[in-house]
Length: 229
Image 1 (cartoon, rainbow, N blue to C red):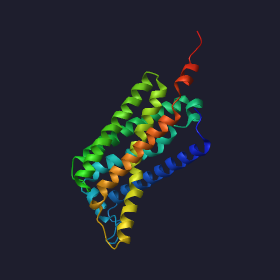
Image 2: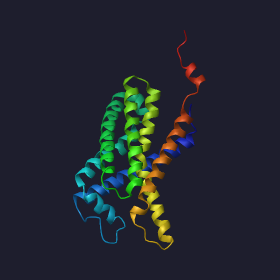
Image 3: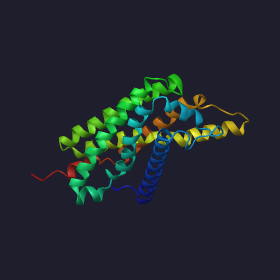
Image 4: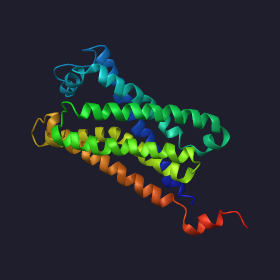
């Protein structure tokens, strides 16, 4: 089906906005890890996060550098005109995207099994959704190799939505932090980190399923697309 144009524009705006947040967060983290103290100070509310990730800088960099590719190449996989006019570009960017995604997923799970800021809540959220992230992208690749492009599209949407949730989590954490400050409380990241992960991942998963079901062809439409005998 052809979805409402205004809704499509809103969705693309949201995706690009979140991808920009993810890219900005990864860029800042890279700068802080490569040049300690460059963007941190005692008054910076992110100073605890900076110290946490500095304790395993190599693993963090292995996670966030491919994440930049994930944020940039992800939206390109869903541009219909690019797929139609430049299928080779779509296939090669897709291979790079899936490779980067695999590294992001594996390193993310590895980091979750170590010490986390949000404790058991964060570990559980990352383990559940990180595993689903890898499964979704593996199924997307499987369907692409079998030329089952409708199923490939749906699993790509699920996988990218989960990865993009990391960017969604940032505004959620900012909201929690601002709400606590307005109540006269100076919160520490560990107080809301785990909850923010659960909220962000869940919202993105629900949004992906709503969009998939909204744009999935009906049974009648699928029959109409079959070649006449």
